[in-house]
Amino acid sequence: FVFTGAAVSLGGSSLTNCREVTINGANALTDRRYVNSALMGEPVDADMRSYTGTILMEFDSLTQYNRYTGGTEAAVVLTFTQGSNTITLTTNARFTGNTPNVTGPDMLTLPLDFALDGTTDANAITAVCVNGDSAP
Image (cartoon, rainbow, N blue to C red):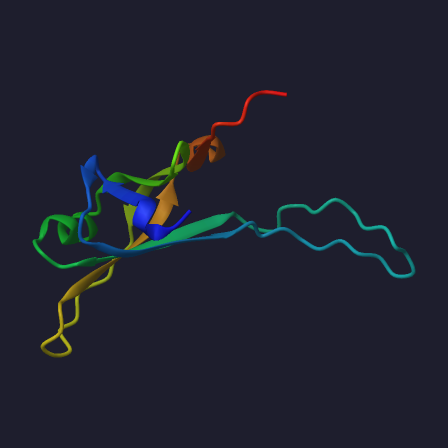
């Protein structure tokens, strides 16, 4: 998949001026290796999982910036398409903030930092892959 086959929507509206999308995740699992043993224990949660991201877009109105200042949540949907194959990532995001910074005559960009929200782990982020492979 390449970025030219990507589509980004935020709160149900397509972002046509998106330059970059980044999603990061930290599972916070412990490493359970033991002295004088080739075996290791099953990793356990050491902390809450953390999922964050950034959408870098050209600043063209206050609509997206107001998501940050208003503390609102919105669905972020990333869809990558190549022929009949698609991968769609969907999450409910809480915008943690970033204010545009004018540094010169360049195009003003708005980095929308967000944290993934969800009432349960199952809906924090979902991924759906569709391809043309037939079932075995």
